[in-house]
Length: 190
Image (cartoon, rainbow, N blue to C red):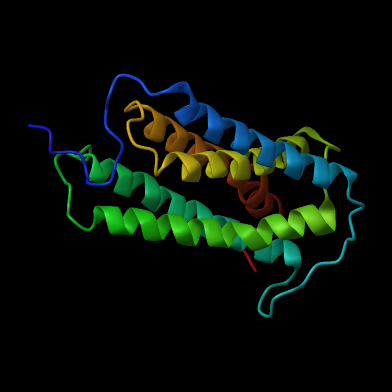
């Protein structure tokens, strides 16, 4: 038996008016393009704020990014629990955990993005940095799309899981091209 859908979630109808998905998609694309354009046209300052206890601004970014990735895993697991996709495990608190883990994950990404865009700009001097720059811009675009789609009623049942999965996948790609690379290159120290 499938548990009922959580309250406040769009219906699983077969379709949605095109504008219901098109507007969030276009706004999200505009955010991603604007960030990429700013990062490309902005002259990187090279200036970053260090945080006590870390060896460098890059180490701060790596650990904040790792925290965001861990909270993103909580997001994935809590979404699966909300929809009863964890072997029937669907506690009443899964929705709250999902919302709060998402908020924390997003907040952890903001100082990282500000540093990347302001101090470093859009980098493309090798494949890893190009992918990282593209994924970073895409993340904020897809995140914007998800936030704009959340309050929409009558969306097709696949929209939020696909967009949420895309947010998760892009964030994991950012983590792989930054934090994982850093840990395998320089070690796990601060």
